[in-house]
Image 1 (cartoon, rainbow, N blue to C red):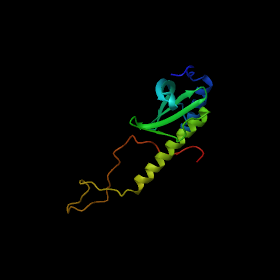
Image 2: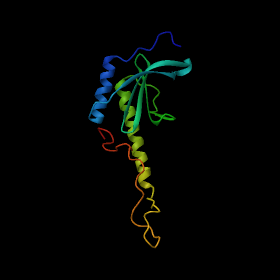
Image 3: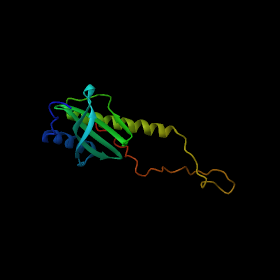
Image 4: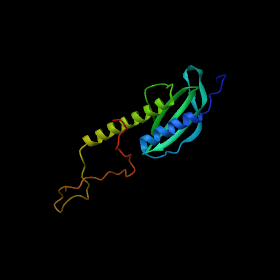
Length: 154
């Protein structure tokens, strides 16, 4: 454990996050404050303040790992957490924008891969002679993330 505890999120930091999310999604996004245990360098595990939110099928966290140090992640399933490739940001706004952009890029790449996959026909979509009809399998994930707009500023 470190000698000095990591300070909680200040009101100005929360304002930056809320403002950035409102600009991104066009509405207020509920933030949840929490504490999480995180590996920080070689110093071992430390309890750190964290902000969590969910939007468009994804979950996000910004973990405060120092007085002005932030580590953002996002995930669709807790077993698969994705970061931005940057260990820590000095500005919380940069951390939020970074994780939103990486998640948007992830969605775009996933959509491109899905668009490149040929449509399959269902067994039910066959005519009397057993030939496949024009009907393709409908997307089984009605709650999938909205892809438009990908990210403001694109």
